[in-house]
Length: 197
Image (tube, rainbow, N blue to C red; front, side, top):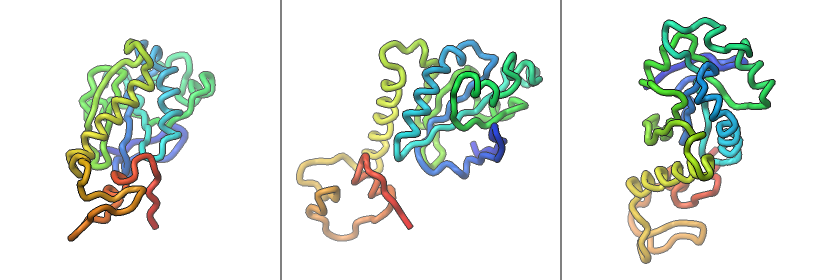
């Protein structure tokens, strides 16, 4: 669903700002499972920051509409900023003071991770990285790429030897109309930044 909300540290977020694949992390400082996930989230946000075609956003939510006092939301830290300063974390946080966003997103468990495509459609969901085993962050990002690859395949078809293609080595057998869109170029040049004017 479309929504807007205040960002910790100032400014406003709107879902209109989602233009790329985005990992949306829904959490709360009051949540023990979220605190267990915190180091993984910091690593995930840092890894995503290094990627050219995916964004990271978190939404800090209360446990319910009846637990919205600052003490219940932020505990001993008093604010998101104080928590980040003590822990050394840095990533964007939309602040849900009323649980309205929690209800709008239909999140019943925290932590929740949503993978949202550039059209604003949720394409993936999971919870708790801290109980995942293996390499939770790299495994999660591998799962993200699997979902994105399936989406590319659905939109553009599977690559087959001899198929009409365009890529880093040029055009191969293109005839007739070929769409020249940012999405087509992104699919044609995976791992590379497509810059538009």
